[in-house]
Structure formats: structure tokens, C-alpha cells
Amino acid sequence: MTSDIRILVAESRQAALAAQSRWWNLAATDRFRVIRRIAAVLAERHADLVAAIDRPATTSEILASEILPLAEACRFAGKHGPRILAPHTLSWFSGAWWMGRIGVRQLREPWGLVLVL
Image (cartoon, rainbow, N blue to C red; front, side):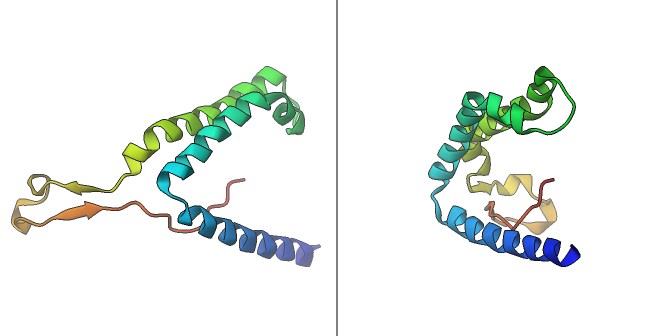
């Protein structure tokens, strides 16, 4: 049993790495378009998602605790993500005075894989 789980984890990790590579190669506008679409699909398919969740809870509890927060997070990220995650240069006025006129450019890049259970 343990070896089966290890094999499944290894295969899942490889698939996730391949997907992350493809995702990274998409333009940011395309990535956020996909995320906005996920919010719409969650709204469209909420009944299927509620049926797939295997725990004792009412439909409204599942919608309120699982599906709506995820849909709202996707909506927010799709709408505000391009601005929030866009590269930008920090003013040298906001830095430490003892560092002088140093320029800082912030780039937000993915670091790797995250497992969400």
C-alpha cells in the first residue's frame, strides 16, 4: 500500500511539474483569463461539485464553505491579479536612507509546486 502511494505521489508530482511549466509559459493575461473562467465554471457547475464532496453537510454549507470562497478568490485574482502581480519599481524614497539611491525592481515569479489538501 505504501509503495502504491509513493508511486501515485511521484506521478502526480511529475504531472504537476509539467503543468507548472506550461502555465509559466503562458502570458500573464492568459493565466488570469483562465482563472476568471474557473470562477465562472464553479458557478455553472456548483451542483456537480456539491455532489462530489463526500462529507456530511448540507448543500448550503458546502456552497458557503467550499465553493463560494474559491469562486470569489478566482474572481478577485482574475480581476486584480494583473495589477497586483505586475512587475514594478520601488521608489528610492521608500528605501533605507543609508542605502542611498538604490533602485529596486520587484518581479513576482512562481517558486514551484504547492500541495493543497
